[in-house]
Length: 54
Image (cartoon, rainbow, N blue to C red; front, side, top):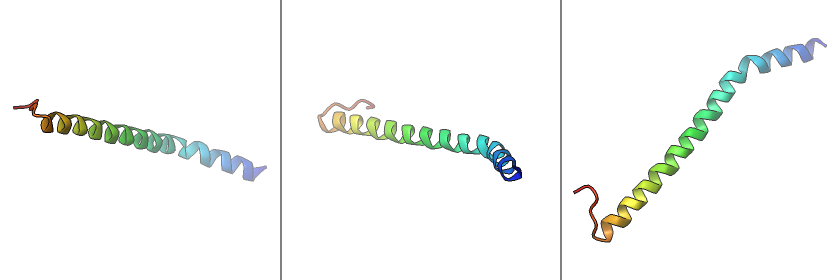
């Protein structure tokens, strides 16, 4: 019984850290995807002769 209680308390202790890391990982992937999407759109406009920022 004590092993189950220890495991549960350890899991509850580290759950906020694990959730924070998961959120950070998903946010990082979303930002990376958004960056490359915007970069691709900019380069497509740039090479087509439209210069969006000057």
